[in-house]
Structures are given as C-alpha cells and as structure tokens.
Image 1 (tube, protein in one colour):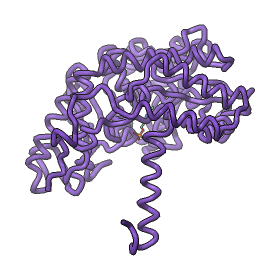
Image 2 (image 1 turned 90 degrees about the horizontal axis):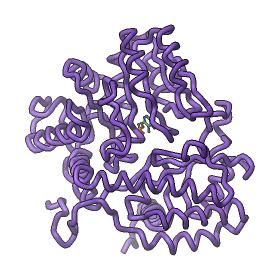
Image 3 (image 1 turned 180 degrees about the vertical axis):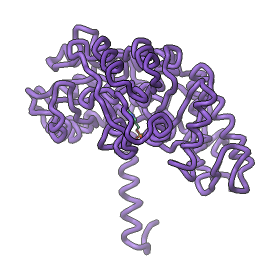
Length: 431
Ligand SMILES: *Cc1c(COP(=O)(O)O)cnc(C)c1O
C-alpha cells in the first residue's frame, strides 16, 4: 500500500504504527504521569478544532468562526469546576506547567519568594529555580521534609513560612504517596498574607473520584493540574479556584502571557473525560488506590524494598521502590523496558539532588493499567514479572514475550460510556 512513496514517509508512518502497537497493546505501562483516553474521547479529539484558533475567552474571542468552540469550552469549564466542588475553571493552559506559570505569575512578583516542597521529595521542575519559578525570577525556598513520615514536616514548614513570609506556598508533588497537610499549611500561609497553590497534576483523578482530599475544601486558594495523569484526559492543563477575583487575574495571565492558541481539539476530549469521571470516577479512583496498595504489598512479599512500609506503602496511585541493591534506578528501569515493562527511574527523598542520572529509585503508577481493567489479581502478576527480571535475573527478552501475552487480555478502556465509536457512529470526523 505504501509502495512508490518517499522512504522517509514510510518510515515515519511505520515507526508510529510500531509505537502504537508496542505501547498500547504489548507493554505494561507503569509511568505514573500517563494514562489512556477512551476511544470516545479519542474520537472527540480528532476533530477539525485541531486546525483552529480561538484566542480569548468563550463568546469574547479575537477570532471569528468559534461559535461551537465557545459552546464546548464554556461547558467544559463548568464541568471541571463542578467536579472540584464548584468555583471557576480555566481550561486553556496547554499543560500543567503552563497552568503553574500563569498562577505563579499572578501570585509572585519578580524578586518575591515561594515556599515549595523539596525536589527530592517530588517538587516538579516547574516549582524550581531551574524551571518556571526561575523563569519568573521568583526565589525558591524549600520546605522541610520528614523522611520518616515521607511527608512535609508540618511544624518546621509552618515555622519556615512564618520566617520567610513568601508570596505564595505550593503543595503537591510528582513523587507522591501520602496527602500533604493542606489545612495546616494553608493556615500558616494565610497568616502571613500568602496564597496556597495546590498542584494536583498527579492526583486530579483521585480528587475528582473522591479518594484524595480536595485541597479546595481544606484551605487551598487555587488548584493547578495536568489533565492526563490520574485524570485520564487529553494532555493539557487546568486551573480551578473559588475566588472570582483571583480567577479573573489568573485568566488574564493565561492569555496573553502564556498561551496564544490553546489547542482547541483538547476541549471536546476533556469534556468527554470529565463526564466519564463524573459518572465512573469514583469506581475508577477506588480501584486505582486498591491496585497501588496491592502492587506495593505484592512487591514487598517478593523481596523488593518498597518505601513507606510502616505507613501502609501508599494512599495514591504510586508505588516507590528503592532498587540500590539491584543495581540502581537507571539499570533497573532499562532491564524492565527490555521486558516490556515501562517505568521511570526516580530520585528518592534521601538521594542527593545530583544523583538524577542514576537515582536509587523507581516510581510506579497503576492508573493506566487500572483504566484497562486490571485489578488486585493482575497486580500480583505484574509483581511476579518484575521479580523475574530484577531479582531472579531471568532473560528480559523471555519475560517480554510473557508480558505481551498477558497484556493482550487488557486492551479495552473501562470506566467509560457504553458507546462503540465505530458501530454507533460516534466517530466525529464527518467531513
Ligand atoms: C507533571 C507535573 C506538572 C505538569 O506537567 P505537564 O507535563 O506540564 O502537564 C506539574 N506539577 C507536577 C507536580 C507534576 O508532576
């Protein structure tokens, strides 16, 4: 079919096809920041909106031709706010980082200070002087961390906030097993006139599914998030706050400071996902946290060093392993990839920051495998595959074949509406 076409064209299509097959059907994906959209959301994503511009806000655009985009965007704003218990949502940030940039720009002037979680304990690059904070010339002050509790050290953090008197404080992280102490930190921040930003990039789906406390109910002034981690939507960002004045200021920063076109084809897909979460989100989030706990237990039983044993291992979608005795994070992650198990190496809270190339840990997330229907039993099987590769020293290529066979049984996305996108004609590409 592709004969007679330029070789580069055939290659690009072929690599894409191989990627799709491998990552979608042949691998166990445990990257904690990824997920899958349903076929319904994917079909909504593939719309003509991907070609269009709509600068500005719904019904107040700088472009013509946006009447249906306006209808979709305003509904999606309403849904995202509703899922978080009310308030105002801006769905234009094209990533969690863009959402953070917009909020940080409003809350902190150049030269001001922000108190953030420490990097080894999971601060995102956008929280740091190397990333967005640095770009905005806001000074990064790290919160003290309690290694025993694997959480923010509340008493020391409160004292630090009182001493530093920052413009804003950030909670939420990328390596995230246990909920941060929102109420106490919010009180400390407010007592010095600072705002509290809760970065829910990783846990948005768990919050919406009511298996993680909603920070807006506990004193956070504004929530930022990615829409594609535990929240299984298109890649993008969102900002939600219940403070109308703050919302207005932040919206004026999203556009025109950080976004011109906001990649409109995300919006229908985000709307579909928001509705999936409204109707199936609790069931999904419940299974995610059960699966994470089960995977942690199953790995510990098989001899892995799993962080947080005395705390019940995890309350989120993540499981964190210390694999120093197995050759370190870089080697372990590579071996697992050869066995068709995709994970990422990660700094552990006690690693020096410069260990970034070969950190001690692996970070695993079960949300995507939960989305395709895996439950506790399957977590046992995943733990067994990992043991074969990393502890028993079996040939990764051999395990890869077994992983492929196993994964082939879980290809259908669950927790969505019973619509067959092909048969029921929901495919929206109707030119
Ligand atoms: C992933 C992440 C973000 C944003 O990531 P994007 O890739 O820009 O969506 C922000 N904060 C935290 C804590 C994250 O883990």
